[in-house]
Length: 300
Image 1 (tube, one colour):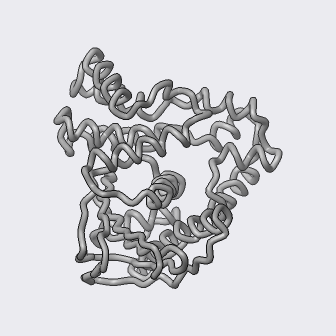
Image 2 (cartoon, helix red, strand yellow):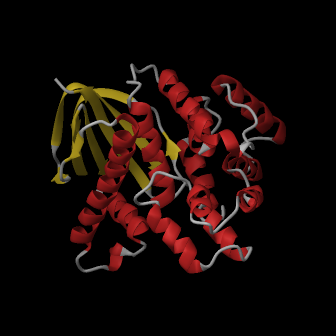
Image 3 (cartoon, helix red, strand yellow):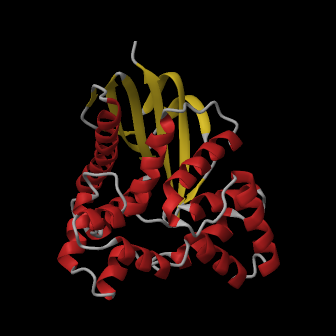
């Protein structure tokens, strides 16, 4: 998940414009092969086995390789072999930037060293510590954004990024966090988690962006569908419900917490008021901008 934050680093350092970054991201889409595709190509797994792992990921917050090993489809050595065949995403982004003439080889090397130094991240190729590295980057990203970010929200946000990658695509760039007490949604879905800790999450985007988002999630082109609005709303609700449900499973398992997931609610041109500070995180995809708005607080 390094290139998503590296893109934010490039924007904040005025290396590229948002349009230039989008152009590179659009060309990257579909180029990085997923582990399941590589496993089938190597003859390690069948299509049915890959599909079963993808379904399992809607119920467990685990990487594809982790689940495949648990199910006996892959060995640890085979996972290492497949991961070694993947081009690291931040390097793929750098190659495109150089190819487009936005940066030179030397400039990219210097930028990468600066990015690693600022985030205290080294040996990015070492996947064994990837989860810890990403959590560290997220924490540092929140500090760079100069926001009083609640510590308990780090895992919530990390899971959201993971679910975007798993179910929508990894061709996005994280923009800067914004602190707010009120948010005006355009085409949004909201869901609350209540219990020992309370979370409110809002997923919002323009209507045309929602259609693209839902089409990716459902693996179906809703632009040509006669009942597009209904299916798009259902897809957005399902994605947010999936994310929050996975978070609830993780939290309850780790902390023995008593938390309940309420039904999601769709809103059009709706204003959301927050009693305490909430955060809005813009996510830039080639097909448009979406906003993830969230608040966490301890119950009274």
